[in-house]
Amino acid sequence: MWLMTRLAIVFYVSIIWITSLAVVLFVAHVLEFSAVHQALTVVYNDGKVGAIVAGISCGIIVMSFVLENLIYGRRRRERTIAFDNPGGPVAVSLSALEDLIKRLSVHMPEIKEIRPIVLAIKKGLDIDIKLTLKAEANIPDLTTRLQDLVRRKIEETIGMEGKINVRIHVVKISLEDIKTKRPVHINEPHVPFHGYRA
Image 1 (spheres, one colour):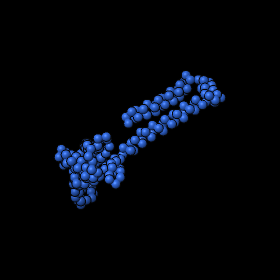
Image 2: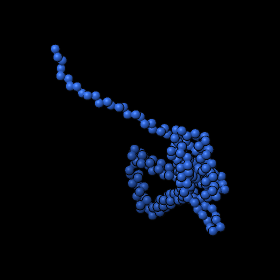
Image 3: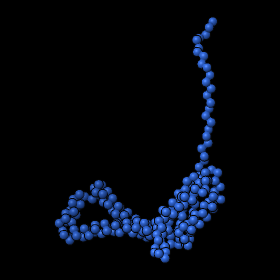
Image 4: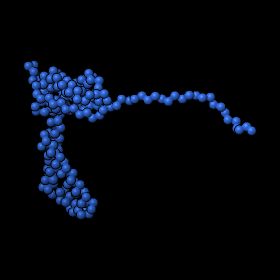
């Protein structure tokens, strides 16, 4: 997966660089218009050269589709985990497990917001959880309980036998809004001023 991603980046960056360099050379008058016109004329009039250029262009298009399918198709497959039951194969969406983890936060009032990301790896599952906590939360105790709860719930739900890594990132501690007392205005009677008297 890493190699295919690297190959795709090199492929697309190379095409962008070559195209950008050609445009810059043309605009800077290093690449003369007559040379460009002559090259295009040769490609247009010579059948063999035109076939070669068309073949290279088609190859680039096919390569871009192949890389896109390899990278994103693999990622789509990685968003599910599959196992075999006596009645047939079963696939579980990782987004379903993320929703399950979100519902677990109901049992912990110290959690204000939870954002889990579940990834399938060869040996099991990687779970990254980002938390926003309330100010009164005891972070070591809360994170230990949450890790145990998530691990146990996933094992019970899908019968996971592989390794389940639960990483927790506390991204924010939310201070509860303190209601401030509004100042009380006392309406005093207004006495009109009529000027000084001698």
